[in-house]
Length: 495
Image (cartoon, rainbow, N blue to C red; front, side, top):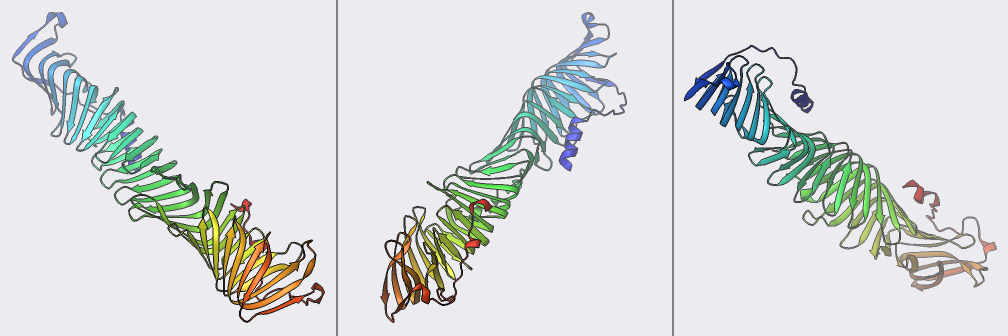
């Protein structure tokens, strides 16, 4: 809540303060007289003028002082010593001793330890400890420089309020904001409007928040974005530490990769830039825009591993309830791992892939990707391929390991190894059923044409029987372990 208090102190500091009237003392002047043209109460002080009110000292080359109104003008080399740390310089001063309010003109400088304010016109209220510049000012503090059109500085609490066209320049980053409060004691900057923080690697944007200039930890709210040339992460709320490269995003998180044309959405994300790792979860959905189609995906949690220097994606891991959909291929599993260098997708824990009319499953599936399409699938053990016949029944291929090869996203042929079994509905060219073929062998090479099994080559321990349909007994046409999962097939509407 401190940043709210700072605003109140700065902008509502016009509360009534009981003031004790004090005398202005002339401590020195090389020459003093009265100028009748200015009135009988006005003294003209010339040369090394020194005046004091309370503990504040005023220096100038010359001055006009009205004893009755306690108002004086200072000319040339104006210097105000407010206290041990605060000094103010200008070429012209107008000071009201009753209200303790000063106006300073031309090359105005306020110094408060390491904080230096420069402007061409400034007012200073001694009662409120408030310096104000209404038309462009610059504040420097150590290696930081901030410029704005309007600004206020409270020297008692060491806080600066910047308003309109705020630009902060530091060795490693730059800040552009609409409204900014700088707590110099704690090196904290608070934002109350659209704000960008730029550095060599990325840009951080938000509409509200704070930035610790020492720890380089930032908090931004009301839609925040962290982006570089290739990727961006946007969320309602975000924390980001530039030193560690750690970011945490909360609520309505969107991660976009323009190079890979991918978008991820969720409600919680973390990124560890320095080690090349990102995680997103809670209502997770993904979209991958390919040349001819869009791949939709969802899971409970997704991890992305990338090169911390180039930002190139190296691996992707998805866990629990993984589902994906593209018009020509769909799939599900409980664990998915994609290695970019090998172009292989590893699916584990009850993986299933649907390609056109075929259902492919196994204890594990390795999908080899080429030109954004499946080139081949390796299923093992307990591999099972089911293909719905054009009229009725199911063509089935079962074995310890099945390698399925694709051509233009359709199954071209399969190689079945280990206890290979098949059931397929053998049809004539006109579609009439010849019979149901049952076969077993050690290995099989299965050819597919027009999405139907066209030819099988058997190797070792061959058994083959062709049954007319009317001789089929109950459930005889299903291989052991047959499970048709059409109801679990991902559909476009769920993404």
